[in-house]
Every structure is written in structure tokens, then in C-alpha cells.
Image 1 (cartoon, one colour):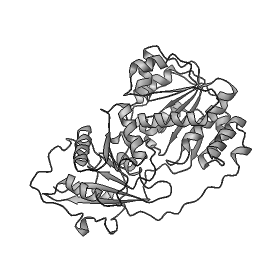
Image 2 (cartoon, helix red, strand yellow):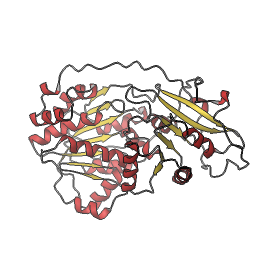
Image 3 (cartoon, rainbow, N blue to C red):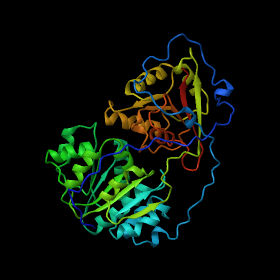
Image 4 (cartoon, helix red, strand yellow):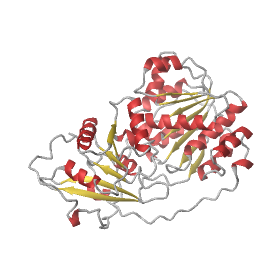
Length: 425
């Protein structure tokens, strides 16, 4: 554990670069037509497509949103030890065995000893690489040995819920308690929960700070701070809230930062939070979706975008689709149109309650929905298997948003497909 100055000078926030390498034209494929093939069949219509466009249009070059997926050459990591032979507590070993976890992933193996020693750590690893267990297992180990409270911050509600659920699944029978505090939930219930003894708090920054300022939460017992998807958390404008939370935490604590990507403009902030850290980069941290086939759907004057979309969704290969739109209004409008067409769809965005969003996400995971329509709230922290396609109804405003949207497909060793609608002027 390290000593820190609570009032360190804060650097001014710099926005991350949105530059990207052009990947080239995507190859033509059966049933997936690009511009050179004439695109999907379209119905003519005289309605203008300019209606309802966001005022601040994307400055991304559509050519940068095309990429031919590279063949998967999976390098299987061979762990050098089993969990049964590790230094973890016997109760944790039993729980891992019950969940079918016998060997650590690469990020888990390379981080475990350092985290058990109390070192600060920066961990960069791809989504699905086992980052959540990498930071939860050392926390649980410490909590079994003594009551040390942990605090985990996440940029989105869905990611916070997902982390807390994983924590519960790993500590069955250990009599350890956790709470999740996120926006969109009932504040009175959170005020009641805040008075209970808690071993782990998982939260989004805004709601956590609100509860702290109401003096119903204190952080005196926090010994471990984890910021998951820290680059996104800073990019979403949470830096001011984060600074206030950091100043309220005990000076002696262990700090862990995890993410799938590394934004070089945030290095100064990383240095403020971490002291003499172990740096693990299981992946490069660069923004890349080399294993996602990325194509454009060009719309000409007279094309009706929703009709083109419905024709695409009628194809059997579009079985599990996440569709992104730029505004909450557009998300709701698209969902209404798809439901009227008999397509199983639902929506998640900031105006929906957390209970609604979680139910929609669970239905999508279970295969009860064909299409989940979302704003960028779903681009991080949504762990859904077998997403067949990602569709951008409008071009995203930044390359960072685009990369993380497209990253919802092409996971777990599979090749994914992403389409972006482009309207010709």
C-alpha cells in the first residue's frame, strides 16, 4: 500500500485523438452487399433523409469505417499453474472449481502475485480476457483474511451491475456483502442500503459521490480502489467526480486500473492515481477491430433508411444484432418502427430506468430479442455472447465510440460483422 498526496495538482483534461488508420475496402460477400454491389434492395421514397439529423454531425471519414476481417489466428495461452496449486485461500479454490475455473487466464496469472502483495497495477487486456476475476480474486483473498472494504468504479450502470454479480458468484457462503450504486435507481432505497455493513461497493461516480455528499457513505475502510474501463470513465466526463472521490479516500490504499484500451493522453492522470505500479499489457491497448468485417451501407436520395434496415434484419444471418443510434429520440423511434414490423426489439438509453434497461439486456442475452437498440451507453461493459452483427444507424461522432461499438461483435475467437449507414449528400 502506498502513501499519496490528496491534493496533488490536477492536469487539464485533454480530449483523446480520433485519428484512425484507413483499413481499405471490404471485400464483397454473398448477402452482404457494399456500394459496388448496389447495396441491399431499397424501396424508393420521396421523403427527405435529412430530417432529424443531429446538429453536430460526425467528422469521421466513412472510408476509415471499412475493414476486411483478418483470419483468426488464436494464440492459446497456456497457464503455468492451476488454481488448485495457487496461493489463494482454500475456500476460494473450492468456489472457483465449482464454477469450472481450473486455470487462470493470462491477465489473471500475471497479475495475481503482484496484487496479493498489495502493489498498484495498470492492466490492459481485451474484453473477455478475465479482467473482472483478475481484480476480484485478490480482493476476496484479502477480505477472507480480514475485513477490508473494496471500492470499484465503472463508467456505465450495466458494467457496475455485471461486476457486482460476478463478485456475488465468487463469494457464495463466505458471508461477504456487496452493494451497487448507480444512476437510474431509487435514491431512497440507496439511502437505506448505505447504512448496511458492506465489504464491496460497486458504483458509477455520480451516484457514489451523491451518497457521500449526503453523508450516508464514508470511505474510511476502503483499502482497495479499482477503476474498471478507466479510459472510458475519464472520457465520459467523470474526472471532476473522480477527483472528489479520490480526495475522500484513505491515503493508504491499493489502486488498480483496468481497461481494454490505453489512451496515451491520460498518462498524467494514471501517474496521479498509481504509485510505482506494475504495468501489464496483455493486448497492445490500441483501438483495433481487426477481426470484425466492417462495411458501409450507402443510401442514395430517396432511400428510406428504416426500410433498408428491416430488409437486412429479415435475413436469417442477422440473428442477434446490436443497433446503435446517436440520440435517445432516434433509439425510441427505431424501436417503435421495428416492433410495428413484427421484429423482436427493445431499447436501452439514459431515459430508461435501470430496471427497464436490465430487463431488456437480459432478454437480449437470453435470445428473446433479435435486436437491442442503444445509445453509446451499451458500447462498454455489455458482455453478450454471440452478437452476430453491429449496425450503426448513423456514423458515430468519434472513432473511439465506433471502435467500442463494433467491438460488441467478433468476440471469443469469432469473426464479427459491422455495418454503418452512410447517407449520400
